[in-house]
Length: 130
Length: 115
Image (cartoon, rainbow over the protein chains, first blue to last red):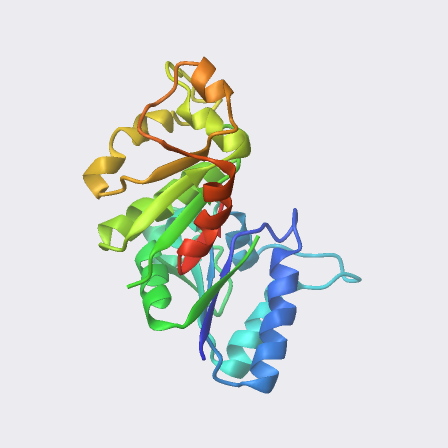
């Protein structure tokens, strides 16, 4: 059985990203191919901000998710519309908006909601963390 | 093809949750996925007629309701117990469910997302 995770809760105002991280670690530990992808929507896209610097004595959530992507090859998608409106911008969007900087952290990618629809139709279950 | 229920429960003016929930519903419908909506709590405010929010207050999501049928989103549910809907001028495209129907609604879909 393959799952998609839909995370909508803010990394700062909720524990959605933290709880999903614990879930995905447990799932991948037991069933390495159990997660097809993770889609971040609403304020959860803030997880992909490469310029955020959490205090050193707190968990670096962005880094923790990057490690999941790196170790398990799980794609981490951010909704492009939700991300761009919140200042999470990759190189091509940066050029499009004629900005001088981009803020998307490594291992995250901007995708439309169509990608989420595709994940819904190609995995057994989708689990929302909000 | 999975049948999806989008449950809006947040105020349309206190956060982007309602708007982003509706955006997901519209994208699902655009991809010809069957999708229904249900509203409860602060999200019911979206139904109130004659809304005229300023830019600072947020987008007028009420305006989107009339266009839902063009996306084949025709089932929008509320719970009958919300009596203020009957007492105030509101959008008439909703189906009112009694308590038992409302409770069973959520188990009729392959997936339910809350905003």
